Image 1 (cartoon, rainbow, N blue to C red):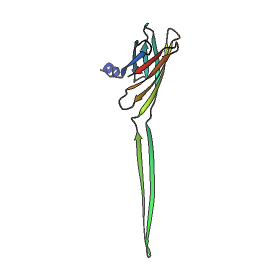
Image 2 (image 1 turned 180 degrees about the vertical axis):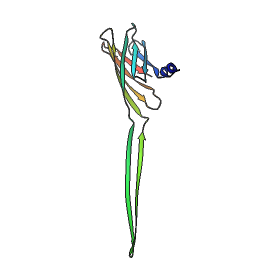
Image 3 (image 1 turned 120 degrees about the vertical axis):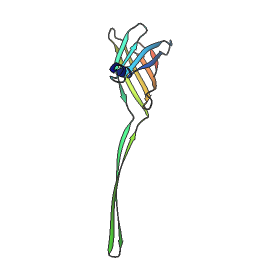
Image 4 (image 1 turned 45 degrees about the vertical axis):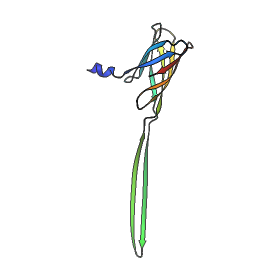
Length: 136
């Protein structure tokens, strides 16, 4: 059962060479933030991704008072309110730098994704000059 739970955190990514159309086998793991890409020759690139959320939290306080006078009498009222705002669900960004453990090959992945559904797109490039489109 634990294996089933952990496997739910792994998602496939579509990474396609923009010049040749060759698709790479790629996945990312939300639990440990690892990205794995298998190159056409079988070389494996791995690395962690960092995500920057556009979520925000704000706290507002309002204080007020009023005093009314009528002849020799007066009445005073004091009030306050606190409001909380949590904004989430916009477009966020993620970045990963992947490395091979057998060569000097590296891949940089930059994507935007939706906080609502986790889907996104972006680009990747390797240090040997290849460019890729990314979708997940």
